[in-house]
Length: 295
Image (tube, rainbow, N blue to C red; front, side):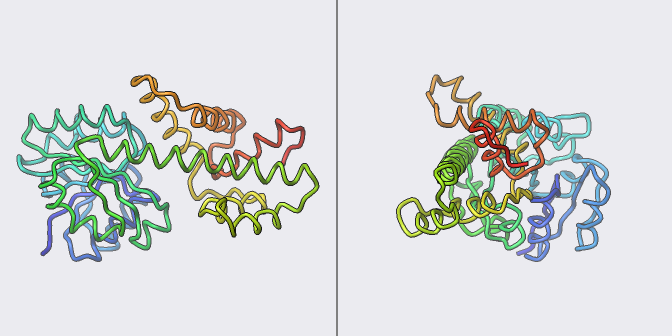
């Protein structure tokens, strides 16, 4: 069954996700700040709109995927935001990675307009977005999740309803903790191998066959060996996600010492102008600290 869908924020991840919704047979209205991003969607069959409010006026389910918490607030509640066009009974599905606390607030504000909300951040990178194999972590009412699930299935494979509003963002924060700390561990291990005179490529090959083996050892370990930090996921975005993790941990009084350490290394990369590198570049910080740069 075709559903009238809105899509706001067709960037590196959002554009292929939106195209997969079109491929699924759904009518799509879209808004983007950059003309070239919108052109990619209109070329694929979407109808372009001049504002988030216009998107919402044409859609029963409105997807948003933008950079940070203030961006989501602006898209939803700004001068030409979704609330000014959405009908009661429509659903906003925010697939950005933002604050769990703010997400709960946004859901409550939308509810006063008769609009439902799901938070549904994703993991899997640009490749997962293109191949429709994303992991999607969802917070919100179970009945709203079931309503939107056929659309999630156009974009991802591992789709889990985690709990109430905000729970999807909590799951994504957990994902980012595990990814960041594991990248740090891989970077430390390969730096340790190199400084001890062992071939880090052979050390990595040995570790891949045991409990230390992981997707991050496979992918990011190879990036570190190759000194190739073309971004799969940029330092700037990972640092933003870890800032959200640490702010939320501070609110709750939760100790996250390993996450705090990696956040500082990502901060250091931001300070050295490396925001657009892949987050595997944390090894550059470690090697500088160890007296050997990678540049």
